[in-house]
Amino acid sequence: MIYHLVYPFFDEYAVLNVVRYITFRTAYASLTALMISLLLGPWVIAKLRQFQIGQYIQEEAPENHHGKVGTPTMGGVLIVISVIIPTLLWADLTNLYVWVALVSMLLFALVGFIDDYLKVVNQRSLGLRVVQKLVLQALIGLGVALTLIALKGINLYSGSLSVPFFKRFTPDMDLVILGASTFIPLILFTLLVIIGSSNAVNLTDGLDGLASGLVIIAASALTVLTYVTGHADFAAYLDLIKNTYASELTIFCGAMVGAALGFLWYNSFPAQIFMGDVGSMSLGGAIGTVAVLIKQELLLLFIGGIFVVEALSVIVQVVSFKVWGRRVLLMAPIHHHFELKGWKETKVVVRFWILGLVFALFSLTTLKLR
Image 1 (cartoon, rainbow, N blue to C red):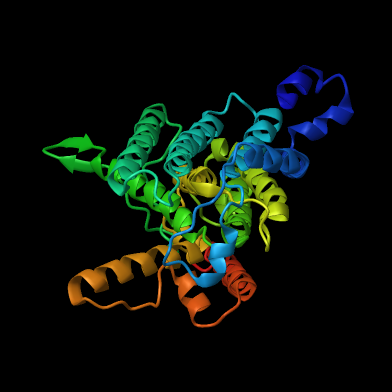
Image 2: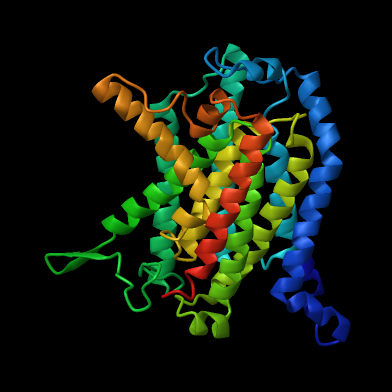
């Protein structure tokens, strides 16, 4: 909105030319998101307490978690607001990629809100059933995939897949059957990435500050990636699939960083507020959507390395118990395993942050190690 308000005056007032630059608008989007999150935080916490929207803890959770019962949850509403407003203020709203990311985030937030609401109403730690949740997420992912196909039809999106460590290997996601091109691989792959990302962040959100800190790291890496993907010189130098439309997503990712930073102020140990599913699902969905838009779906495995480990730990635990009748971990997701091993909650969180940073930095090095 600010970008469009000052746009007619770019030629008349030279000082306003700074607003043209993605780096300037990204920095201010991050700061705006941070300020909104910090300023609205106390009011949101007070309102959640007023409406008695508190956290319910599973009986099998580690003993120290039972003292968190009643802590205000659904704080993800604060994060979503803190991302959307700065993006609308500082981004070029004629850019379709921005709207795809925003709508995807809002729809995943809606699914998370329903899940959290059912937990509060039913006064238990379970909301939507797994199947219900997956169906709703799949519908959103399908909507994103169909939008990408439409963008591909007007040459605003590439069906090629960027593979880490390989410069020239960029397989096309179009599958040719009987001489006709079909988008089935693209649709299925998009669903896998977006649904997987949303649920991985959701599973990671189990300790004070864990998910929000890792989101800051992942969103920061994506901020760099969206910028270089949309920059002609950097994209050519790094042999990336260049897409000038992806550059405006830098502002969206910067807003995510600022919003998560502000939320971490209140979510750090001991947490005054939890993000709930409305926060974790929306952030995970947004991260997955951005990765799909900039063609870094495979690199997302490294960008969100800890999210992947957390999700895999749950899968391994469930499969092991159902097939062999025994558990590999003391408790899944894996952060609870280390708690039961005797690690303090803060130690688990900080060490996972460190590992998350290592994964993210490694993901950026792959841009040149090809």
